[in-house]
Length: 409
Ligand code: HEM
Image (cartoon, rainbow, N blue to C red):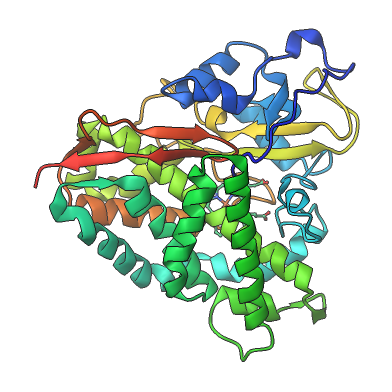
């Protein structure tokens, strides 16, 4: 989700040791470089493992955790680190719902996670594969013979939007409207424009879910959410919205942004492209390696009680940002961390771990594999269009906002 407001930086709280203060905001620092992954992880890995930023993200002050081991430890510690208030979305929208299940702590979290789980297990995702593949092919068909495309607008935003509408049982005729909102949300010129797009999306989801309520059961996730039973009683309107909005937020920007970074990287490394083209069997490993190296997320936690965490005095209510983009580039875990090596075979925390690990992980992986399979069976060596620039916005989800590509036809 994009950063939507930027009040002035608050004072440093007294419990924060001066030597841990990093006087930058993540978005601000990352915007000033051409390679935010390399620049920001190098900067933060060169100092203390945990730093305090007065304007960490969305202008919120908080701790930034950049080492793989510490990120993993916090993911697994739901006693000291809470998911409550992890997003400021409902606050921004003055809504009563919370994103469900991601903003709920155990034991309540499990109730909703268990409810949604069957829709995301590998067999359920396999049932979506045919339509996903046809959708990806149709998009690539539109520009393959042209020898050029603007990858973000013509593929990366479109594909997960199609997948979302299919998964939720929402009409594909909404696609153009969705893309317009999604484009404004990710690339709108100011906060008002982005906020307007977000409100339009949430209003649409509200209306679509209301229409699904009470209708005969359909085989789609949207109908299921709208009509499910929670602990023996009918789901409430707020619960429906909490789940529907999370499906949108969880599965759209993350996938679109990830694909943008992967293709930005590939445009500069023809040898990797060649391997993907000539050896499709490497695609699952390639997907994992790109996931490792290009996490677009800073996942938020709130400190639930005063603790000393590896020597850092954290106080109840402090925000903590788990920097996936730095954990994936941790040189204590990954040799030569900025290099993409399909044979690395190491696990990563880009899709989280612990009870909140990404519910959509099988779907995300399937989308990435389908993209690689369909793209590399069709399109020759591509590069950044001469004289063109690729832009990006390292907001709450780090997004590539334009990527003009060309190839020979
Ligand atoms: C490359 C794409 C993706 C990335 C990098 C990603 C990353 C993550 C991460 C790091 C978490 C953990 C959040 C936390 O611990 O607070 C998470 C949770 C979640 N993701 Fe994904 N995700 C991706 C794609 C998807 C997709 C396609 C969906 C489908 C709707 C999805 C739905 C969810 C949901 C519902 C949760 C919350 C799970 C829970 O709280 O139990 N994600 N994701």
